[in-house]
Image (cartoon, rainbow, N blue to C red; front, side, top):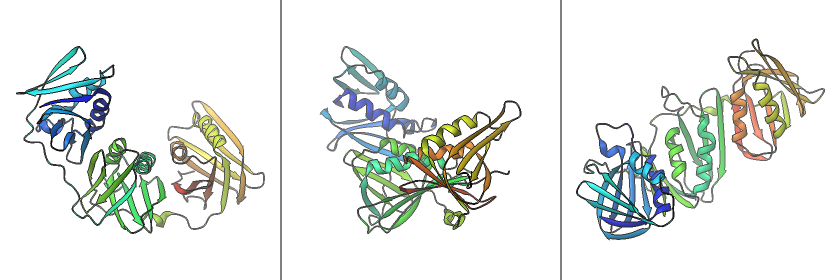
Length: 366
């Protein structure tokens, strides 16, 4: 193999693809490597950890075809060290890859690529939809933090995606809070639903282009295909809980608060939260005031009172402050609507004017 690639493009591609290599695989070195392919289909970088896989296209000049596997960690470190513009040349001979950049040369020991597994592709072409990559990137990066980090219940450590009636719905929950985001789609024919592991979704979000992609899926895999290549993930084989059952149908009080007031007051109050990170919120409909309260026996206590538009009954509820703050990364709305249904019932937060988001938080014991 002998190829030449622009430095910046090669470096960016290496950083994306390396995320999909299995750094912990000691028994199968090919899994902890990046496969570099030069042939009739051009130049490609490929990596997989058997849960996710990527096949990324690069532009460059091919002098000689070939295939070589390079340890992902080493390749990423070398790519990070590039400091100037221009091209790099990669030449493979025997078990060595020679990388030439400007006046510098690096000789990298390669690994056997015969054991490198193929990247599976969904078998059912009917389940496919075209959508902007930026839409899916934003969806994954915003709600993934609400999924469970525990693997005890795989369905809760996954993102639930549903396509119905021209609407793509994404849901993530760890049983303490839940985020639902809905986005309209231009093509309304496709129907379906699947679960993708949350950690896979984050890696995929980093690899997706902003431009149009094709998302396809079957019972076992989902794929995201663009002009620049393909990303594949296995799906979670589990049933997602019927989360709609826990969404309160009625409310007894609603407060509309400016986002900046909510954020600033919450940040100050959390300084005084206890070991359980608990703070209390209060709705005062008579005075149109919304309050945060926290007490820590070792530090002291704090009350933050905000002007708000409140309708309904007086109510106090306690929450983990991290779950309240999480809504700020889910919507850009200038005002927030907080709706409660009573003691012990979940709190629903929405962005005023943002119909795409529903965020639900379970209260703590008073």
